[in-house]
Length: 633
Ligand SMILES: [Zn+2]
Ligand SMILES: [Zn+2]
Image (tube, rainbow, N blue to C red):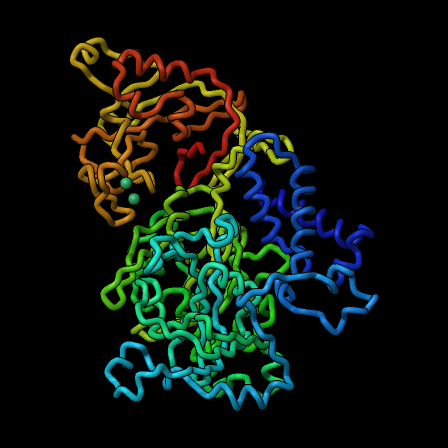
């Protein structure tokens, strides 16, 4: 896998630069090391942004500069005033005399010695919270709003995918009631002292949303006099019963987990619940299609990913078959954000966060919506394979777009995934799932469509065509020496080819190759539509504006394989002088013609266009998954 090897190399060089270069040597000791996942994601992003002209040297210097930026930004100290240090000469001047504008957007940081005060002030739990809608019904004496004072633990801080930037997540925006403007919202999931309540949300808006950069999972928050939201938006209502917001009278306090433990204000762990069980995971080996029966998402036992962030305390921890790659935190979670080497699929176990994996998509399942309280959540599964093994990844809601944008056989790098707690099925089997969702910051890059990997000599690793065999993905160089129109008709598997001239009778009858080769597709997922308007993959009726004409690039399973149906595709014959390979795909690029255009030209011109591809020399990315004919990407 050439991309992974490139990343291995960049990772090694970058680590060396930071360890040995005198400019960074001191910082290196004090800061988190360079992780493989960070290098991979940033490089994939650079390659996507600059398809041409990118070299190894440019990637290295870009990453070096980026990494320096990360070291300078120190989110947890952004609003800390170092008044006592004003005359200290050991600190940099900028740290001592920095001026900030007056603002309500601040967090009060508590220390262990604040313990007694915390116990005295923050007495409320979720059970004593009075919802505004119930206040109306109370007597006039009680209509004066209750002042809530809560001490809560952060179980999840909403993340945004790296490439969307701050506050541009359209899913988290809502129209403000008075002004018809869009507001940015960030949610913090919190639990109270009791272990049996579901989490509440602390929703922060616009400028306030920046405060989430100073709050981490595991921290404690003191919420003094919050606004208990009256009208929840749909996204809030599906995630929690109680939603707190920060009004002008609200004060937010924050305390780290270790300080809370020292001060005696930490949540007590229900340790007795954590029984140890061992269970072998079932290995299934059907790579062709994930059927609904064997799919990881076939059951309703699987829960939305955010659900897992507070459920792990009640779950049982499976004794791992091998040594875990990292220590688990107090909550029993393994956060892979700072894991330095490349994470392999075989390293995964339950209750992990911030997972990045790089592999090939070997199977995809149709949308299998999760139904909960009358609401349906989209759920797409993909089977990903790397050098160590394969597993199903479930993408939820908005993150589904990453499943729609990739075809079987292509390579992908997925980041921001998490693994679930153990779920018990009705039959008593236990299993866990790999989940991705926009809330957790899941994002993905399709490596097979990165032009950069083909055009830049620094990243191109060519495999000679005649040595390609089996399943996998390669970059190769070849000449196109022939074409065939293949059909599903078993009596006539080859309709035409460059070697058999077109029968004039057919031409006179108005015979049209596009009847075989061109079909209506769903714009979002490129799946061929069934009955002209239904997408089997997404499980929806597709509106006219979302339909596009496209070349059939493979036999489509959603279409019936009758001998009468006109279903066909182009098969290219590739030759490098020492071997031959049959492949399909890339019709638009090779023909230099869109499917819509191809449909409008006469048969003679269609075959002339196909003939014009012969003797073209190409560098392409080829993938193969249990097929004898490879796909060109
Ligand atoms: Zn679709
Ligand atoms: Zn549309």
